[in-house]
Length: 179
View 1 (cartoon, rainbow, N blue to C red):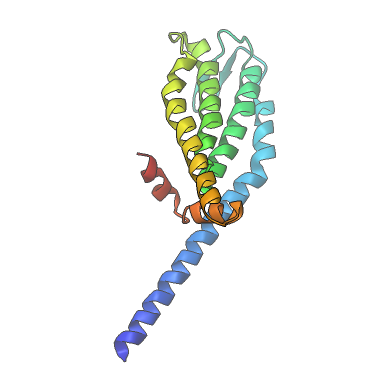
View 2 (view 1 turned 180 degrees about the horizontal axis):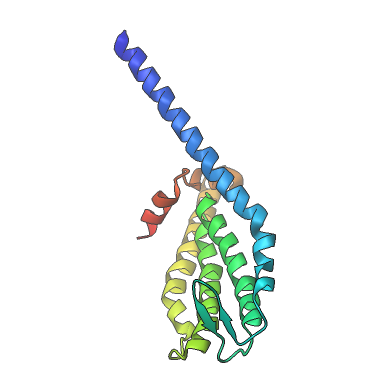
């Protein structure tokens, strides 16, 4: 009898810990989403000079001639990237891998923004091709498989999508799935 009570207490304690973790991560995500309009306007605190000195670093905008402009472009790329990453790691639908395409495009644009100032070698968009070669066919194959199942069975699209949804995982669990 004691072991059943201990097991029920342990399972109750684990469920409370899971609820707490979900509440904490949900609060963090909601806070980030609420703060994004303010993060977008952070470029206004950057001076309109070629060299921007802070206590952490010094930024020299060689090609752009204006650090404020560079930070405005950076924030216009980084905020959508942040929102896409949140969407990617919290999405449970079968098509969430398609979000990698705009994520990679924003990362490429940010890299190009700063590589122009640092005189790196030309970074080509061709480096995105291997990722696209994996993502686009896999999404198409999943979609084709879904429609084959629809034609074979009497299930609706919503029922099949519910069947293909991924179980909720934490951030590190989803990250481990990719690497």
